[in-house]
Length: 137
Image 1: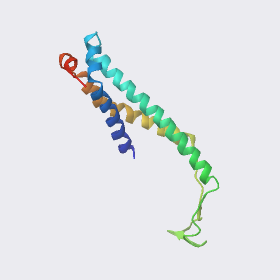
Image 2: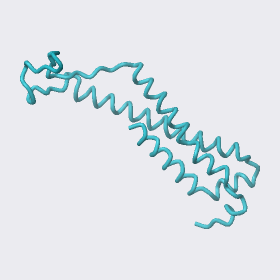
Image 3: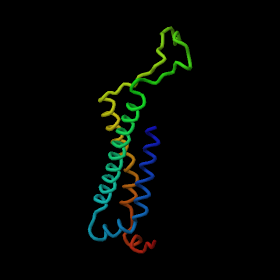
Image 4: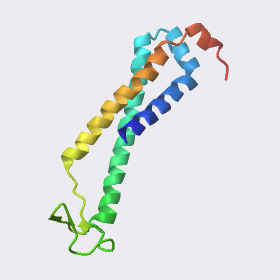
């Protein structure tokens, strides 16, 4: 799942870089260093990751709480005496919300955003200023 998230971030940020090639060339012509350009791209990737991660986790927690706060009932699939490896299983699964898990997910998403933004930032630092100024849409 996190690999799919990373590929989505790389795709979004890289397309943003390639679409705004002229803009980055102009910024570098006006005095931006390649390091500043790369930092700008990484910052954009982090903001995209953090906002979308926060929205996704909030929406997921709300929907899980709203629909499954009383548990997800699987009693239609098996009888009351169902067991797995000698352990009796309850046919109603109740989700557990733990703050540490939510924070761990946000931190992991933040790290994915950093690593997924490195390649697009590298591409933005390698833009040839003269070539970017000739770029027409």
